[in-house]
Amino acid sequence: MNCCDSNLLEGHTTHPRDSDRALLADYSRDPHRRDLQFEVLAHIEVQGMIDERAGDMPRPPALREVVEWTHREFCRRLPESLLLVENPEIMERFPVGPGKLRSRKVALGRHLAPAAEDIPAFVGRGEQAYDAMRLPKALQVIGVAAAHHRFLWIHPFLAIRARQEPSPHCVA
Image 1 (cartoon, rainbow, N blue to C red):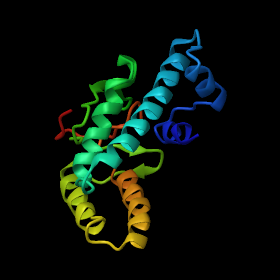
Image 2: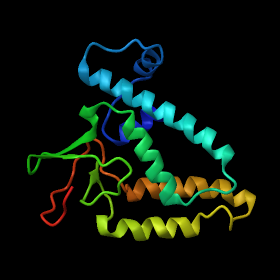
Image 3: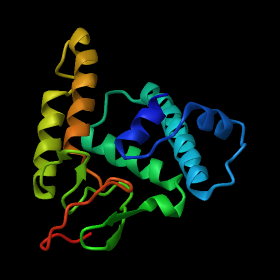
Image 4: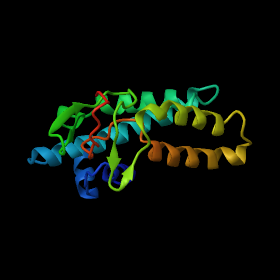
């Protein structure tokens, strides 16, 4: 269910039955629905990798390291069709840079994410505010939830097939 909700943030409607079918390697004949099934599998596989990796770390890694690694691993598992974003206003397509912070504006629904040039500062502040080594155990759980919320608000990567805002001074 988490991957269906995450996909919805990107404008992808994936139903639980499609996820169940994907887990059984029963893929849709429709290319778009099949690609979304592969996106579900990517979410599930990367979540498993996160869970495995978390137990091996002596301390939580920096937020930027985690989000870049997660995005890179996620994108490696996606079909090529999902690794392009399109800006319908200027009729251009841009490749998603796996693990690379975005260099252009992005909007998800009504949310216009912060400017690309501000992302490193926001991520850096998140690393300070939610550093598990500085927080007592009880606040670490809250810190994870807060960091996730801030990550979604910052949206540091190009959104997969979401609406990209035109920007003459940004390059993909």
